[in-house]
Length: 64
Image (cartoon, rainbow, N blue to C red; front, side, top):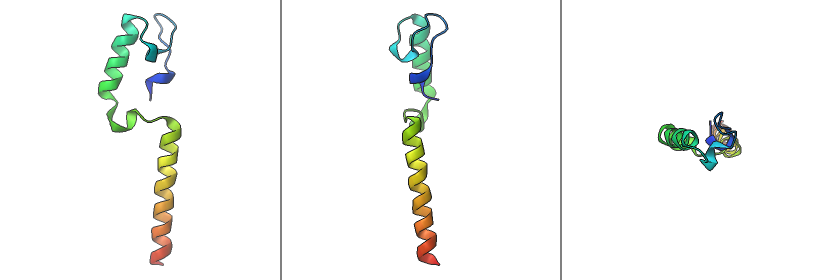
């Protein structure tokens, strides 16, 4: 999950803005745990999956 959509329960602001210490701590923790795909938006992930499916379909089509 990306932190740009989360709302802080402490200050009711988006976590990515880091307005309070709770937001900043949570944002820092999520950045450390995110991994390479954690920074991608959901639309980018969908596009990546569609590209992979198209590449596999093309490979199957060429080998058949």
